[in-house]
Amino acid sequence: MYEAVSMPIELDTMPGSEMAQKRIMAWFENAIIDRPPVRFVAHNAFVDQLAAELEGMQPEERRERWFDAEFQVDVFWRGLEGRTMHGETFPVFWPNLGPDVYAAFYGSELIYGESTSWSIPLVQTWEDVAKVQLDLNNSYFAKLADLTAHAFERGKGRFLVGYTDLHPGLDCVAAWRDPQQLCIDMIDDPELVRVLAHKSIDDFELLYDRFDAELKAHGQHSIGWMGIPSPGRMHIPSCDFSNLISPAFFVEFGLPILQREVKTMTHNVFHVDGKRVARHLDAILSVPEVHALQWVQGVGDDQPIMQWTPFLKSLQARKVPVIVDLTKYELDAFMAEMSPEGLLLWVATENEEEELAILKRLEQWT
Image 1 (cartoon, one colour):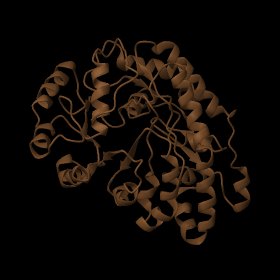
Image 2 (cartoon, one colour; image 1 turned 90 degrees about the vertical axis):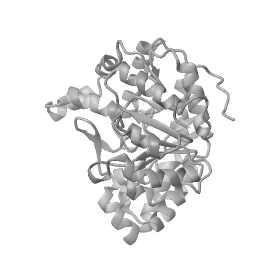
Image 3 (cartoon, rainbow, N blue to C red; image 1 turned 45 degrees about the vertical axis):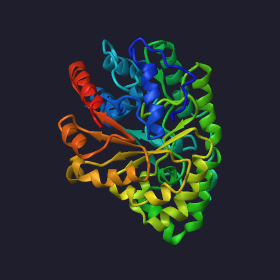
Image 4 (cartoon, rainbow, N blue to C red; image 1 turned 180 degrees about the horizontal axis):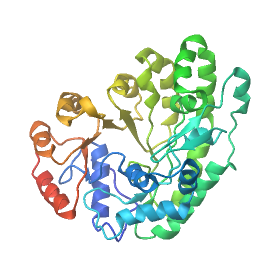
């Protein structure tokens, strides 16, 4: 059945947290205790909140705000204060300096926008490979430590604290090299790609263990930006860069790194960012340590969710637990078409009344 919960989560803001954790553990096993799990949040809601605060600021002012631990926690807490968290909506402050921060640990500089940051390419020639050196004393690593410490101080009994987004592999190499150039490298200089890819993963265990140890020292679960807690080691592998390359190139350059990345984790949920990343699912799911997927269907013509129900049913047939992001207006049609096994829903809501009503509907879903 589902894994026993050895470290109950106790939060003033989430009265049902222990049962919520059990539902998550059951979901990893394609089991249902009383209903499928649901988080009342939309994909990327955590960055949208910060973006609203930074709108209209100049670049230097934005960077200062990103690096301001008190400001970051204040923004998070304003969105949480006074709320009761329902379903599996664990309140998590996520120390975040952008998706390329892992590359920045090795010397890349980041430019900050309102909702994200991006890397200035570090490697222009083979000679630049020597510049790519892990520095645990650099400003990005130090600031994440500051953000984490400040969040732990203010979050006791109110919210959980996660660890930052750790992206080794081709996403990291793309940050060091530039995504377009990396595509060319795979044809013109594949050895450079292999050298950089392995450089990106060599220190991954060391880095993960540093963040994980801090969470464990505070008696807390392992948890990242998805808000899914694990009493063991939770990780969110991804390869957004793979939307630019063929399945053959993914198998050659991406798959060996993924196999190393997930090896020591208790729970891995692979972030599948759209249909072009989904082309690589056979390779991704060939790795037994990939325990579940997050499906992000995209925007525009890739919505609504109902066009993806055949795809989601194919994952259910393969016994792959999957996170699905849909609107509250799509929920009835989705429930009528799908069975609940192996599904974890993300549904954005506006108030507690909507959330309680959805929970009642999910209890009747068979």
